[in-house]
Image 1 (tube, rainbow, N blue to C red):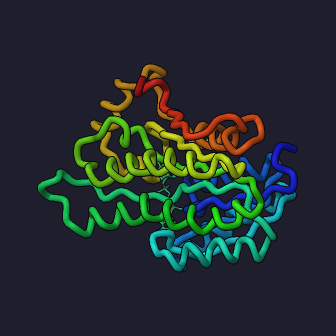
Image 2 (cartoon, rainbow, N blue to C red):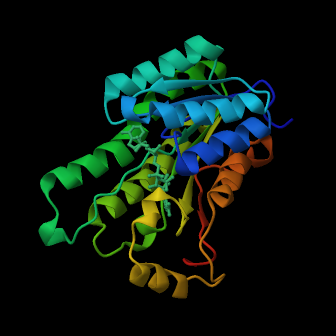
Image 3 (cartoon, rainbow, N blue to C red):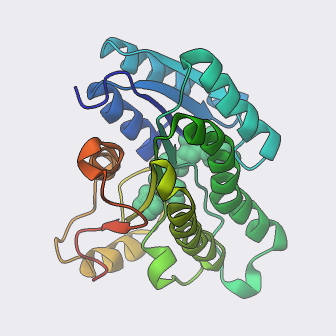
Length: 249
Ligand code: NAP
């Protein structure tokens, strides 16, 4: 299988795109580290671990808030203690705190930047230490089409996801000579808890802007991440690939 002997850490993988990505990588042979931020999410993380174990792969779950540097460091350290290495890092954890700029509170700005952007810095810095020693690794960061085109009521989220793109391209340059690639995926509208809360009006407006005339599935994103994590993507570096039904082109 594509990922035999490989270890993948997916942040924010107790549900949604992260959980689906974990499952997809396990189906293709990887051992998996599931991450969830708070004790309250333990049960859903456990469900994902059990699903992975049923595929015949190994999986562990580690609680860590990726926005806290020391927690991200300890997440990666525990993952390496468990499996001996780290081959694939998927920086997926993300949150939204939407509001028009005039109504957006400072804490809404900070929370989104801290999880979505600082979390990517924290986990990448921690994992790169091991990948540099191994002289191999695949880093896949989950951005968003909103980071490319902006969106009303999402100045904080758009800034964080645009930041992820700049960060990805910078580390893609820094690490390339050490056998590590870094790429970003930019999902469009994907059916998940994050988008379930949007009104029908917003959903219909989105749908009208998607040439394929349907929302994406979590598997659509997981498939792209798995491709970028595979040896088939060895010569792809520093790219941002949209998975959005043609919404942005
Ligand atoms: P989701 O269903 O809300 O899942 C987000 C995951 O991140 C959850 O497991 C959540 O844990 C975890 N998380 C939140 N804060 C965290 C923290 N501080 N540390 C560690 N984990 C944390 O969202 P999703 O739709 O699957 O989105 C996954 C990624 O795709 C995000 O980066 C999102 O911005 C991006 N994205 C999504 C869409 C879309 O249409 N859904 C489009 C573009 C980009 P809890 O369960 O404890 O909250």
